[in-house]
Length: 67
Image (cartoon, rainbow, N blue to C red):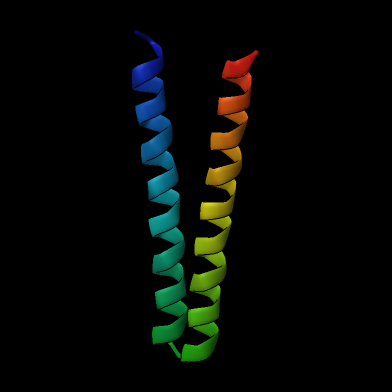
C-alpha cells in the first residue's frame, strides 16, 4: 500500500517539472529572447524527451515484471 502514494508523488513531480519547463519556454518567447520557431522546437523537444523516457520506463517496468 505504500507504493501508491509514492507513485502519485512521482507523477505529480514529473507533471510539475514539465509545466515548469513549459512556463520557462513561454517566458523566453514572451520576452523575445527566443523566436516563436525556436520556442516551438524547444516545446517539441521537451515533449519528445518526456514521451521517450516515459516509454522507456514503461518498457523497463514491463520487462521487470516478466522475471
